[in-house]
Image (cartoon, rainbow, N blue to C red; front, side, top):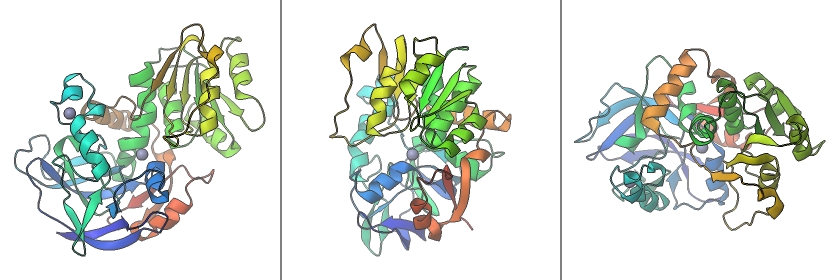
Length: 368
Ligand SMILES: [Zn+2]
Ligand SMILES: [Zn+2]
């Protein structure tokens, strides 16, 4: 089967829109006709070469569409189902899956860095050359093949451009509050960084009944948006010391829960400084893997929990349909996360606009 996809051939160069070819679904595969995909900062990290993957590759890991065909043995979805892609499928029977930690699935951990699906092969070629899959999803394409556990069936009522957001940014930010921190009603929450993930931390805190919800960023436009998502207090860290501000707003103690969602080296330390003793810090952002993060020892005195989470404790088959229903109930804000809708051939412009303070998420309409 042939279709259009955005291909990265060399780090630091524009993506090329090319006709690519896939084989028929193999046992356990799901072929999805993709309708929408978001542009995530992690995709940009690969384009820039700071996150190494074998090339050429089709990026994208935030996608939604309709099941077109399934391979032998697939029982969880069937053609016609609407699905959201999960970038962390799991085998269900390795060391980590058996210990209820599917995010660490050994089969995926071993095959993903090679740009392969879980059977350690690729399904795609471009002009006869092997193409690599990104994070088992490769959603910057009109079609994709994913493992069955990476195709999560959801209601047909949610539009695709909003559904796709649940697959990465919403799950990561919202799940940090509900699955990882398990924030109780009335707890104080501080969020460093109000990009796409941080805004979902804010709305997770709002729906959990947290108070106050303190949003910290360096761009006033983003802080204004954070208020709409539920922040009760905002702090511009370029104008004032965020650690002092968080302490002032929490009777001098520090916040019960602090979520780091900026992914900038110099925000990890203030995030840890801002939590009260006995509280919890969740680190969502990421930086260069070789970089050391300075932490003042005194900031950890008095018992604190420091957690690193990459996907908000995702259990996609449980969480994605719940998040969809929360949106359909009018509680989860997704429409407001989409700054611009673009076509596949505008993908390079979409990545160029990432980082502008007025762009939260660009979403590609893959069937226009
Ligand atoms: Zn992402
Ligand atoms: Zn596993």
